[in-house]
Length: 230
Image 1 (spheres, one colour):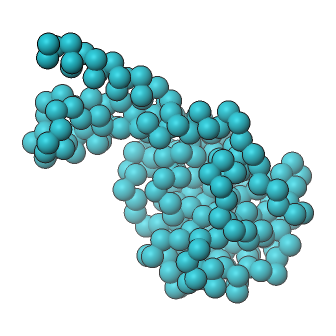
Image 2 (cartoon, rainbow, N blue to C red):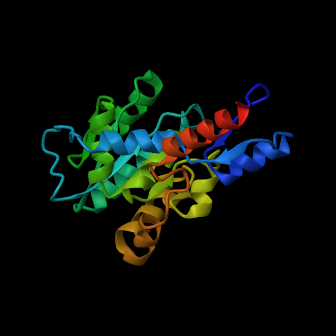
């Protein structure tokens, strides 16, 4: 940003942060181009073929968890919440693509391997992940990227962290910080399973990170800049 002539901020908050850093010239809010790519890929998607997982029969909850801050006790508490929900509700199932990290895998497999409605899998290909997001009921994650991508498909995001650098998602209502405490996770998942109005409020909130037209806006700003520079 100290060297660039043009600055394409994904959100107003990002623009404000640039302004606070003294960068005020040629700063444009365009949305994030990742949403453009996401929508392009989503046209042709593949659901992962997972044995015994019926995408139409149950409400599938997609879970991704890997951040270092959740290793240890936090991941154990998250796993306990998933285990209790899976045992108490036969109308839901959990799809958990496991991170390659050994610490994460050992905790998940030791706590969740025995439940028939919990599916621990290898990491999904990107198109399979997008297909899973489109088909699932909601997403639980500590991933920053998914906080930006998931709302594009109208799925609520429960963030398994105490804070997030994607503040825009929280403000827009597309995501909710719930932390890693077992009872808190259970209560928040049950709320979205049982309260349709709250679910719809999150699902229908507008994704603050983009609408799929960011690349076009950036192109126009570039052309205008170059035209003025002649």
